[in-house]
Image (cartoon, rainbow, N blue to C red; front, side):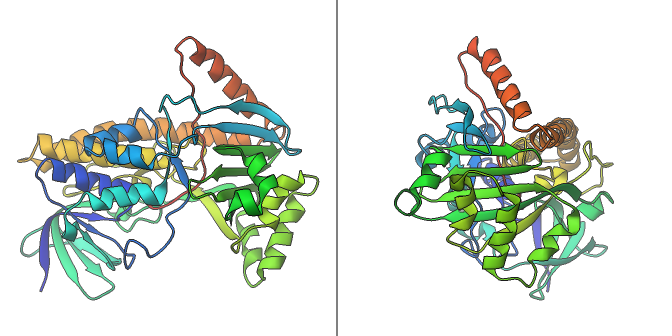
Length: 399
């Protein structure tokens, strides 16, 4: 037997959960289907800077501002840019303006999950097939790997970079950006790794030498989360297959030859095996013709590299705007979807373009010169307004 859900959201990342929560605030129920077994199935990623012009607006529409404040990392808005010798080229303190407060991605996800009715998120449901539904209620039916099938009137693809929903709307697929990350974590950093802690600072770190970068965050639990970013061919990452962790560390450390020991230590002294990851993006300016009964949000709609810090922010904003459009047109979902997508495409295009341009600037031959110039210019622009701003952060995930 098939169960019918008027609104089905695939993906319990930040965007899908934000959509479900804002719908719930307006008395409209939706069901979120998530492939992971439960909310604790995996670590959700590192720190996120939540921007006042999009991500924070989504949180406010979800009526979760007070809960959000409880998970903000004090001092997390601090940021420093270093050269490969760990010389500070630019530094910005956390001025408490909350323009981009830092939170742990997993903690923010928990806030959204806890704000939904108990049975709103259905775990352990990996979509294997989606098709137009010709008989009975609903426009689409969704088959899951556990043998269950559901139907829905409105299918929302919030299922990340490799979305199962996206092919219903467009043939566009993510492509490799030319950058790969190798991720590491150092635990109990102030006690076990004082040199790395001192170099990282209180918030975000960006250190560059041409086409190689070390990026990271100091996390609220006292750990350091770091990424080595490399401009390498797409198949380079395959060298990690079949080698042990010692060999993997040495491979990355070879890329950091001549770097300061405190920066190399973010790899050499990692407390977990290194995680290699290719960075992908959808074409800048992606859009599609309106297809009744289905839409996308977050990475499913506009996957971009993390170098404008907009992925999670846009996902939550997308989710909120989608829900508000439905609440404004409860009797005509197609009008709601047309309204939502007309706003989605231009804002996603702008952010994707910024992200692509930031990637080129950060990994160009004279880096970190361009990065320093950009922030010094922004500081001058902001001086008159009395604000402080930074917006680059690492990581890609399903939203």
